[in-house]
Length: 181
Image 1 (tube, rainbow, N blue to C red):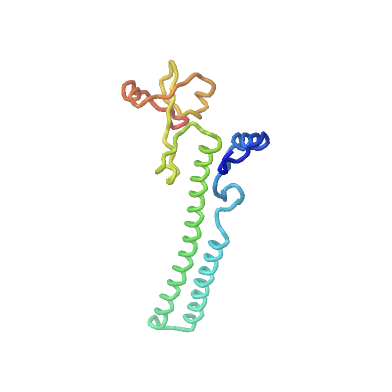
Image 2: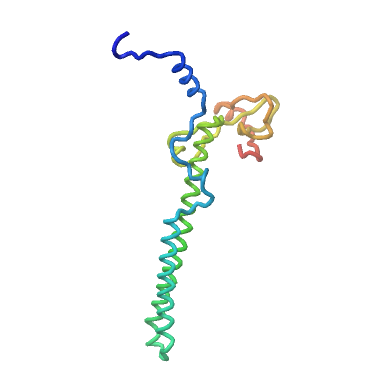
């Protein structure tokens, strides 16, 4: 035995075989598995701070304009109140966009996890994995007039084969409306 080789006993081999049969876990922490809301505390905190600032600007402008009787004296405070409303709207919009971004990220991670862990028979391209897109693999069987996705309930339990691109052009079958294949 050379100095580079390690002694591997039956216990080590058995553990290595067990590890090989265990389904791999996702590499990163998946927020969609543990959290019920897409917003993080920082998203909500920033939105609340900016909304409070916008409301404070509105209150100050309202108090200052309340004692003025001429239009010229009220114009500056009216513009200030519009700035306050704008701040509140931007805070709400940023909060909603942050939530939407997190939902998209969770959806993308879920698609990648489905392909990696469960082994769904669809191909994920490298560029598609970044975008969350799954390249469609279509199947069809004997006497079928439509193409379906492999997970379509209509083809479940039936003998089907993957439809090649050449066959799609030659036969030109329709696509299933249920699975959007």
